[in-house]
Amino acid sequence: GQQLNQSPQSMFIQEGEDVSMNCTSSSIFNTWLWYKQEPGEGPVLLIALYKAGELTSNGRLTAQFGITRKDSFLNISASIPSDVGIYFCAGPGGGADGLTFGKGTHLIIQP
Amino acid sequence: GAVVSQHPSRVICKSGTSVKIECRSLDFQATTMFWYRQFPKQSLMLMATSNEGSKATYEQGVEKDKFLINHASLTLSTLTVTSAHPEDSSFYICSASTPGLPPEYYGYTFGSGTRLTVV
Image 1 (cartoon, rainbow over the protein chains, first blue to last red):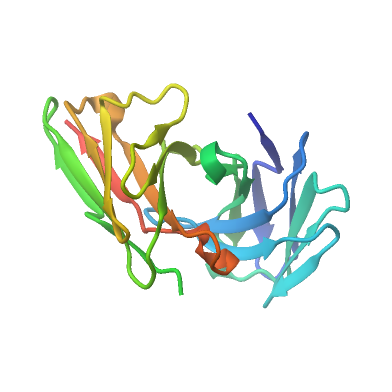
Image 2: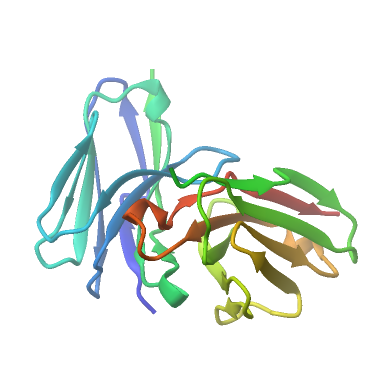
């Protein structure tokens, strides 16, 4: 099946720093999604990308869909403590259009 | 839009008993609901896809007789973990979808999850 390779696995940063994480795939995705999950909660959709090359922002978050539809990055500018969590990339490609998820990037912010 | 509710949020059960988890779409009718499982420190894995009024489709390696899915209405799907064992302890999460609506209704919105602990 389709797989999403997400990196880095974890990030330890200082408050105020910018963050960048990315996802790659060996196969084409028609949609690329970025989620944030906090402990004990379901993932929350941050940004959805539908067109190759699309660059979309949501507040301090910016994500881009690669031209080849096989990669995407998520940037967070000026990180704050509430940005802590696990960030997942995902795309349709599970059974009957369920989602395939990357392994996640665990963001830890040090005061 | 696209609000999905899940109940209960936590459940502890004894080994050998069955547990039912509910997933509801609150503001739209969902023709399809997806069930995922997430083990600690791991990613979400699709377990099964349920379509209203028909049998669920299970992903490879997921036992359909252990994880019974019922999607009897356009707003409710249930996942029953039968004869639960400690290895079934996990975080179960659902999403709901209806093609033809805006993309936010394509199964991209998740419930808040159910933490199952089997003792």
